[in-house]
Length: 91
Image (cartoon, rainbow, N blue to C red; front, top):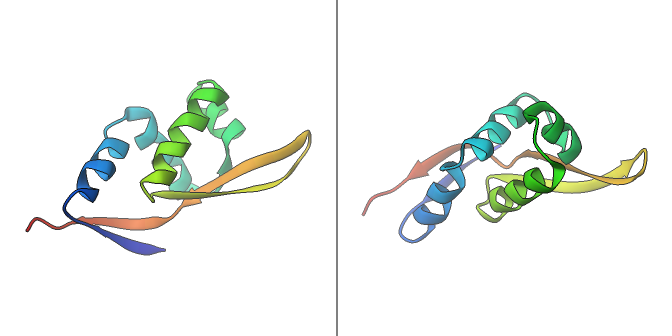
């Protein structure tokens, strides 16, 4: 994993992604192991639709990455952390 260094307007995007309790919980879960959206929803007792929306925000911020894999009933979206550490530079 890598370090994400953010500055200027990128800080707001990262701050928004980290401001949600649900998104923070998703990040903590993914530190342990890769998970698909269905499993994340089950563990956090939330809907798949909500978790999917939260995952999109984390992806746009560059905090997680996802890929589609074959599942029991079609495809599943598997997520994993994209970074291990975030550094915010203040200029």
